[in-house]
Image (cartoon, rainbow, N blue to C red; front, side):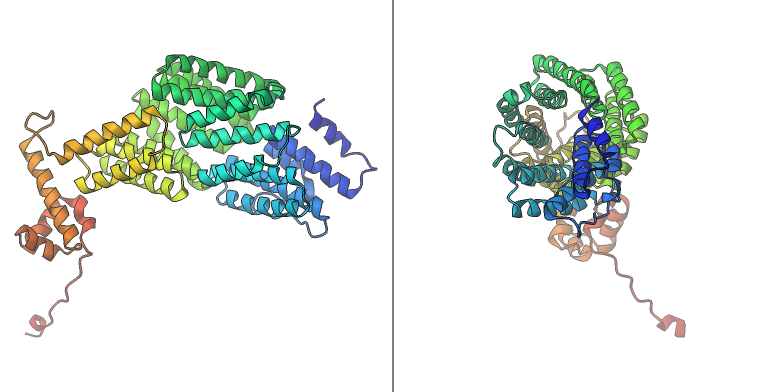
Length: 492
């Protein structure tokens, strides 16, 4: 019998007071949330909470009990909102958690303040607000002592995930090394988290630095994480690590094994009715299919993934999925849609504060379209933004991509050369013409009439060029105004 089962049996005890029963329900819910059993945790709360989007009724509760109810309802709102992709759930979760935090502060219950901050940090991370997540999690650690082993371990793990999300891998490794002694005496569930995070960091370092030994070590860490989670009966986290392992195997070109692990993860999340994690598994599968050059299959899968992430409002994940869709459409020759999707991915990630994701989307836009299909001014601006957003990255792969994109920009600015692989006289003239037209429109504020004078053309000639050969520049001009029709001819 697990501790949670024991607590569930205690609920049948008729001698419990109302307050004792509420606190017990909250304790059971907390255990189930930690185990990833969010739906069961919702049931454990009973009538205390009506579900995501609902605020618990706490007016008649004592302050210390009200705070506990708010904490568990806030945490569960965030987790259920994530797995069910409920739009606005993370903001609702933050509101409940902030209210719980303030109540705990007024009661000087600083361990509970840390617990509320831990859950808040997770909400910020899901939204792609990494700076806020890092700050809140650091604050959560400050009042804890060596006796607060489990909570400290959970916060440290979440901190590493924030660092990984911004490619600060060595900071993540440093945190794990600092926490190693904490995890040695921890439960299987916490050991699973420690191994899983270490595997994630080693995999990122391996792909970035070309370290085959790190790849092998990452595989070992993932397998260890899966083992410990299975021992703890944490199925949801088994699925997460199977997905991570599949991603690593696809990087190694072991596509068949990757698909097998994804099938296993998909079965777990399907049984759990976890649409959020199912979408992440599908995104990994789409990446494997792209690596196998099965673009039509990848196109079908990634379209469904994007719908799921749009519904849930998890913008960092959405930006990554949009970036992958842009790659797929580029490989299928659907260039205009690919460019627009990649631009959208940059905006989505940047607006949410997920600057690393935005930077990678910008690099992808240059890699897929910078050599020919982007205007020079846009190309330079995209590179500048990517360089700024990735300025703190420690990922050697991303740094190499930045340098490769810089070469694309330099080559474009230096003009096409006679011995270039795809050189044609028509193409060179087309690019030169497009560049001058774009600059003229920018200098004239979008006025076709003034731009035409700068170019030595008539208004009609420039309009014809825009409507035929250079349609992508149409959005650079001011909207066409309809001319009033003369009524004089009609009267005559």
